Structures are given as structure tokens and as C-alpha cells.
Length: 373
Image (cartoon, rainbow, N blue to C red; front, side):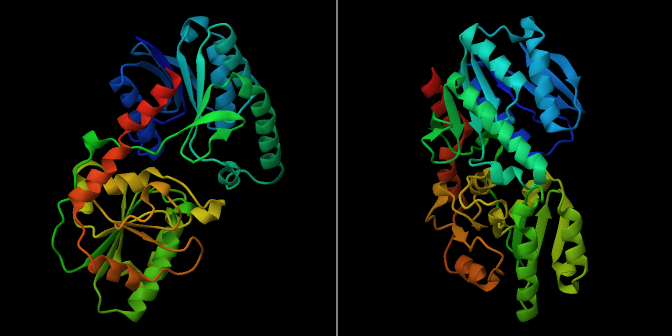
């Protein structure tokens, strides 16, 4: 049975609710469903491990700095030949910032072990995405180093997995897939009847989710239509949560209709979904310089059978009757238009769920396997 070594820094700690980690777990499961033995790296409780042949090997304690961890990962792997015996296998790397240790590792995997190298680049172009966390000269140096190592790395890369429509990246051929969902663990909503019109956002509350934009729009709507009963559930927590709570608490109308639930999963999350009329997708993608993305959350909403609102182009949902598109800018959103759109048609959760089946991770990762086998 052919092997895959999947390299990422996904947090598999028991209390982690990170969407990226959830995605990586689902990809690993899909590879196994497709007949591949899959080893992988991950973080748990601040330590970086390699899971190989169902045994966990501690590689190092995380520094907490992604770029340093990235370099350390490849140094540790290179220092232990037994752990990287993957002759004729597939090395699948989820986008890491490039560095010298990574280049040396990949060169060894290709030249000495004849492995195939696949890079997954979740967002492309990704420089705008990184600029929100790196500032000034550090950002420029990081991007310059990335460009230099990409130049040397590209001759060793077989394919690049992308969620964009690019046919080549760094001069290498792409495998274009969509973000996937784990249908096995997704149930369709059982819509509860109530008089309150309920919106729900599930995210890690970053600026690009644009929850503040929706709150400001909701405040304006409540000012103009106080007789309309609305509710907004915010599920998840992140760097923007304190600002969002401050915004809500400073507005008496919002404080009465907005609920911060924190992280929820399982039945608790399903119960909130079951009272939801419309889900709220990302409304601030433009803040990181993007206009087209294929976020996992859209697919999860669809898998639940929920109509949703977004402010960017997602090619997989273009023109779908259960998606309400708003401008990708800082303008306030017309809540009355959204409610009228929802009330003007009948949504069938099972039909929306059926459409989402094309995004199962097994289906998406099968495209990868077909290209590299």
C-alpha cells in the first residue's frame, strides 16, 4: 500500500476548535478511505509530533513562532533518517513559508528517495493574507525569502493543490479542488418554527469574517424596524471577539438580540443551527485584498442545509438560489433585503445538502490521487 507523509502544523489538542485542524483531519481520513497509509505531523499541547505507522514521535517543543517551527521541523526530520524513510511515496506539504531546511529536505526526498512532492496552497495569492500579521520590513524580508526559495524549490515540486482556478503556480501545474466537508459527521438541520428571525455566524472571529460589519448593519436595521424580532448567534472566538463584545455592549438594541456562545460542537451546535434561518459567511474578505475564495464554512453551511450570506465570489456557489451576495466593501448591509429574499422563496434543507455532497473530502482528495498516482 502506498504511503503519504502529510506535513502541517495543525493543532490536534483536545480543546482545539481550529477550522484548519478540522480540515486536515478530514483530508487525512479521506486519504485513508482512498487506500493510502498516511503519516502526518501535528501539534498537541504545545509539542510537535510525527505520527508514523500509528506511533507518535515527539520532534520538538513548539516555539510559538510559525516560521521558527517550520525550520525546526525540517531540521529534525533531516536529522533522523529512520523517520523519513519514504522511498517512492508522496510528500504532501500544506503551505509553509519556504526556508533552507525545507529545500534540503525536499531535495533529499526527490533525489535520493524518488518521492513525489505535492504542495497545498490554501489561498493564492497569499501575500495579502500574510500582510495582516507581518508588518513593515519583516514582511518584506519574509516575502523576499519566500520568492527566492520558491525559485529553487519549484523544480522539485510535482503538483500544487489549489482552491483557486489557477492552472499553474510558481510555474508548476495545479490540481484545482474545492474545500471539502466531512459528510459523515454532518446532519441536516431540523428547522424549529419560531417568530424570531435568526442569523448565525460560525467562525474564529477574525477581521476578514466581517462580523462587525453585520453588527453595524443589524443596529441600523433595529433602529428602523424595532418591531421586527431578530436574533444573531455568534459561535466561536478569536482575536476580534473582545472588540465585537464591546460593540454589542455599547448598543442597547444589539445587546438584547446578540448572543456570544463561544466554541460549540456536537448537539449544542446542532441545536443552534436548528433555530437558524440564515447563516452568515465572511463579509470582510476584501480586508485582506481578496475577491475570490472558497472557504470551508460555505460548504459546511450548505451541508447543514442552510441558506447563507457572503461578500465575495465563491465559484462553487455562483448563482445558487440559496446564497445571498452582498458587496465586498465596508458599506452597511441591507438586512431588509436579506429577509425579503428569504421570505420570498421556500428553501429545502435536504436539497441544499444534496448539492453539498460534491464537496465531500473523499471526492476532492480523489482528484489529487488521480493526478499523482
